[in-house]
Length: 329
Image (cartoon, rainbow, N blue to C red; front, top):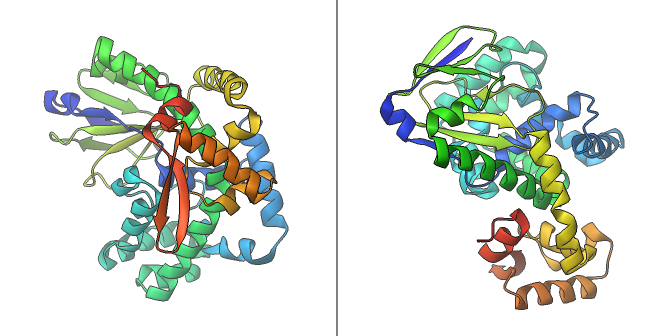
């Protein structure tokens, strides 16, 4: 059992993540690959990704290292889900690659001790070898591009609905009520949050640091997840409520009626920075058609155009993000 101890200061600093955490979603989506899912949201996604992996080639080879570093049961290194990921995928990945060598060694050693088959694969990461870290970076970027970016808009829609419900409880009834609302995954009483599904018994004292609750699209089981290292800034990752997820998906249809199906899909894809050619390739339309849709969305203030060196990316504006997540107000 894990027991998390809240002081009054910790309750005052209980926060909800403002947006989906890309590295938590990445890590947990890899876990889904190992576990058959009947979920109408995760099942089709998993089947598509399994087909990609079974096809072999460079993608399958690229995934050997990340999957060894991130087993689907038990411990995986905390450095894969840094606090900086709240600022976006690139910021999170930069933090992963900047992990101090001493911490890499400690966390990979802990993993290797529990998963001996992976030990040899992870020597370069444990030692902080630059070429191995670059290899990890390349693999995670490729996986993010193929597995998460195409559905990030839908992730944002479901996350936004879950967050709105949790935020309502927090605002109306306070932090203790929000913690209590996480039952039956845990039990909250007298300043202590008890998570009975943890295999070992330990106590985490927040000591005024507070905690961030992160709803996750890919968190499958009806359990909560926490970091292994109690010295790090603490988070609690929870699965989305299926009822809320269904309601969120149903809100997509009015958006389709407003914008049209293809333009809605363009808007969803722009939730991750993408070029015209990337959007065209994802949707199977011509680059000129994708450019036209982006121009209309840009003129409406929903998408903004950004130049990065010699490349141009399109991403959501604040208004576009609010429209996509249903948080206009």
